[in-house]
Image (cartoon, rainbow, N blue to C red; front, side):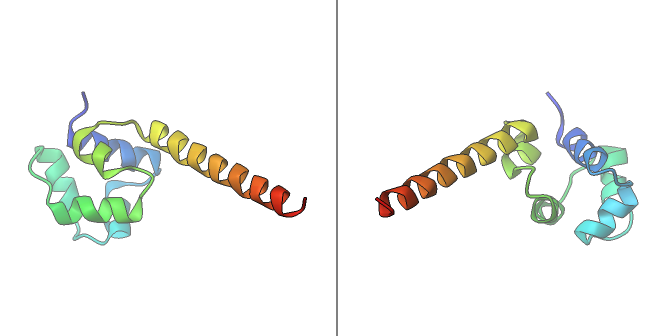
Length: 97
C-alpha cells in the first residue's frame, strides 16, 4: 500500500508538475512540501486540504488513506453523471408525450 507521501508524489507526477510548481499551485510556502516528502515527515492538514481543493479529482479518502484509486473515483463520477443525464433525457421525453 502506498504511503501518503507516495500518493502525493503520484499526484505531482500525474499533473506533470515539479514539486516547486505544485507548491506554488496549491499556495504553500516554498520547500514546505518538498521537505516533508524528502524526509517522509508529517504533512500538515492545511497542505492536504489545499491539495484536495486544487485537485478535487483525487479524493481526500484516497489522499489520506489510499482507499480508492483516483481512476475508480473518476469512473464513479462519470457513472453518476451518465445516470443523471439519462434521467433528464427521460424526463424531457415524458414531457413531450
